[in-house]
Image 1: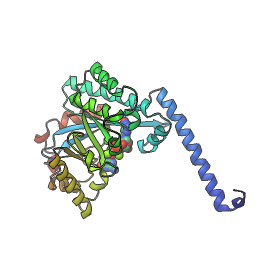
Image 2 (image 1 turned 90 degrees about the vertical axis):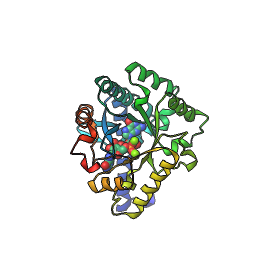
Image 3 (image 1 turned 30 degrees about the vertical axis):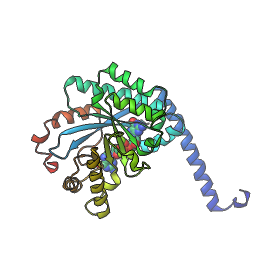
Length: 290
Ligand code: C2E
Ligand code: MG
Ligand code: MG
Ligand code: MG
């Protein structure tokens, strides 16, 4: 260490490192406060059928604002994971999202299915399945209106122990299981069967520039064919432009989620969006996804 002292480059590097460390420590402290005061919001992003634009689902996404700044999940969730705070954050998100879903259900608002993201750390909590089923019952949201989104690496857990049993129990109770960010993780094809998952979510990186990137369109086409062959449904993530939407339609992709359809929105805004889009096929402004 002493050797490098006095050299401008090292000094700069050391300062940056220390700043980064302090930043992380601050973020963790703020996260603990946020957990204690349940200061997380949930936004909802619609998923629609490419055959007519009908709403097939809404994904619940955690939001955290601290002193006027929106901290992205990609920034704070890894810190939460390291600090063991995922289960606590998940409980707050689930409580809010399930309450909202139950309200919509009671009000007759068609949202398809409520998709909840869940991490391995949350799934490993004692009696995760029992608590989720109790919560759904208490709030009045039927299990058939709920899906869990997991990333591929979660599937690698032994299917006959821990997480595997939890997921089996929840599926048996009627909750759908979806593989998020499909194509970017570590699941072997052995795990991709209709016995284990209900839907694959094609990762955004394959959707981006699908019109300009032949590899992407080939990958998307192959994933769609794979899923169809296995009897698993599909949704493409992150479709932003009309061109991407029509390419997905051309390739036979049945459903999409992305800024090109709608951004994630606060509950009240999502409710208004759902109310005007529940007519689906009759809408003229969804003609680009006809
Ligand atoms: P994800 O589950 O793959 O969610 C989709 C992400 O893509 C969201 O980012 C969404 O806002 C973003 N997105 C949707 N459409 C588009 C698009 O057209 N273009 C672009 N560029 N992005 C789009 P977000 O909300 O930042 O969340 C990031 C990740 O954090 C999620 O990825 C998920 O893995 C995780 N996450 C979010 N909320 C929760 C939660 O409540 N619990 C857990 N365990 N994880 C969560
Ligand atoms: Mg997701
Ligand atoms: Mg995803
Ligand atoms: Mg992701």
